[in-house]
Image: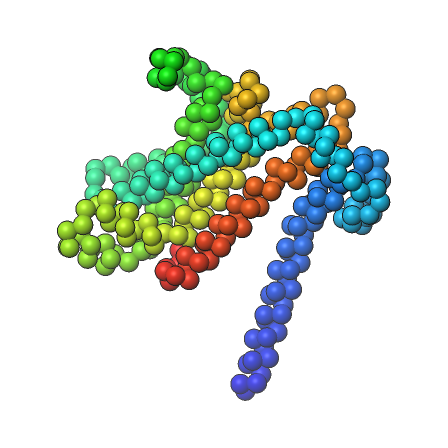
Length: 292
């Protein structure tokens, strides 16, 4: 009986990993096509799309597409803008949204259920419906900087950061995760005289690695892939992110090899960030033993 059980377990594992491998291949094929195509001239790229050669580095392979891509657009500037805006937004979002989730779970204040319901309800509102009102608002907002008081946030980094620091999904993720943390830890800390800030910073947040990694990945993808909002609020090249920079490759004649080279370059930070956070996610689960 034990031998049959072991065989069944192995069979299930084989079937499971086979299916997961097939799914992984399906999702990785576009990345392989993009990477391989970035080394091919346009005529060969288009000819190979009708066969498996599209996924193989065969034929006239060179780095000329990358050289031409750098000549056509200031790629490093666009990547810097996107990474700066994304990094600042992710850090501030994790801090403020986790504090909001903490208050919804552990603090008692009037109207918190109504406030939480309104925040969750914002998840069903498409961004396109509020983009124009937001544009009118930020175009008239004041800002006190080194040059004194100015009006209007257009063509700045802050207009791409501030409106997206807090969002319903991130607050919801932290709130639901905090509800599953052991209440005994919080109560013991309060009995010993810890303030709510100490409970949040020293107890709750160190146990929240999985939700921090998840929220960071989701927020990173949203911010790094911003297109509609930046194209509305940034008319100057020095503030444009990577997806707005993609327009440079579709102005006169579309060079698909250069497009693939550009897409390959701007995809690398996303993959690197995901791999780093994936390790942090697994390590946090292993060290804390807390399941979210």
